[in-house]
Image (cartoon, rainbow, N blue to C red; front, side, top):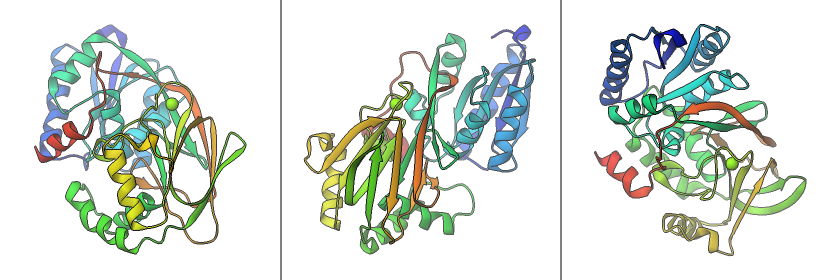
Length: 314
Ligand SMILES: [Mg+2]
C-alpha cells in the first residue's frame, strides 16, 4: 500500500489487550506513519461503535484499508460493518483468545504484522449469521454457552485466561446437559443431550481443533456435535478433542452445511458466539460466503494447542 492508495482507518478498542499488545498497536501505527501513510486512529466507545467506524471507512472512497485492533468481539463488529464492501481489512490481535486472528495465522509479533502488510496476501473470509447477529469464528451451544453466560455476569473489562477457571469449574459440576435438536440444510441430524458447535474456523479456545476441517473461505460452516449426557462424557469429549481423535468417535457427528437450526426443549440452553453471549434459542444460523477481504500472513497456519499454551504461559 502506498500513500496515494488512500488513508488507513485505524480502529482501536482501548479496553482490550494486555500492555504488550497495546504496545504492538502503537508500534505498528508508528511503522505505518514512518512509511508516509495517513493513519487515522479512531478509538471505539462500544462494540457497536467499532462497527460504525468500519462502515464509515468502507463508505469513504479515500479509505484504502481498515485496520482493527481488539479482541474477537471488536473484530466481529468491524467485519460485520465491512461485509459486502470491497474494503480490505487488517486485524491486529490484542484480545484474550484472538480466535479469528489465530486462525488467519497471526501471532502477537510486530514482524508478522509488517510481513502481512508488505506481502499483500489477501483471502476471502466467510461470516456466520445467527438470528440476525454476525459471528466470525464459532457459535457454541450448551456447556461453553453456560460458561460464557456465567463470565458475562462478572466481567468488567479485559479478561485473561485465569478469569475462565472458576466459571468452567462451577459450570462443569452444575451443568445438566439439556437436550437439543439440530437441523442442517433441512435435515434433522441430531436430537438428544449433547454439545453443538457451528464453526467458521478450525481452532477454538486454547487451540482446540473442534471444527477440525473448517475452511473459513469455503462458503460452508462445519458442524460438530458431541453426544454427551454427563460429566464423564464431557471429559472424554475434551480429551479426544485435545488428542485430535474426536472425529473418529461414534459419539461425534461432523458435517458441513449452509444453514443450521438449533432448538432446545424447554430447559434453557445457552449459546455463545465468538466467546460472547449469543441469542436465545431457537437459533437460525446461516453463512455469508466470502463476505470480507482480509490481509493474512503469507503461508501462515493457525496455531494448535501447544503453541497457544506456550503463548498463554508466556
Ligand atoms: Mg467454512
